[in-house]
Length: 125
Image 1 (cartoon, one colour):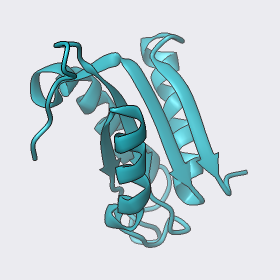
Image 2 (cartoon, one colour):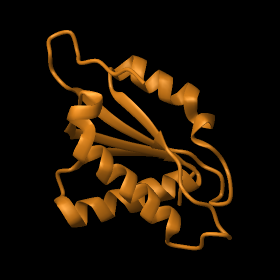
Image 3 (spheres, helix red, strand yellow):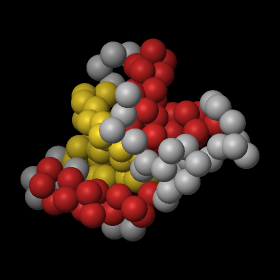
Image 4 (cartoon, one colour):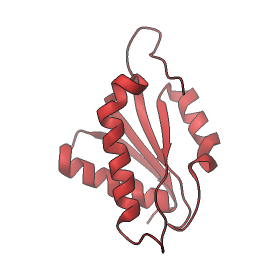
């Protein structure tokens, strides 16, 4: 993986995408076209995360996996990816949308309301 800073040396925004799959399937690579478009149109570092599936791993496994991944990304955004952890957005489709909302709320409860700058969900409740 190669991530670079913007031409003026600023850190890039950080976007986390969460794939759909009804909590029982799917892979992050399904969202590659969407993630590529977000990266090209915004200049953001885009990371698509995976999570454990039901029924083998019941609730709250998927929620915990996504939250843990985002917390790790926030901690390592600048040093590993050249991304600004203060410019975090999250998206998800279907089950990923539900996980995006849940993770956003959990992270804001843990770290403060200004952490997540925006959420975009598709097909979520």
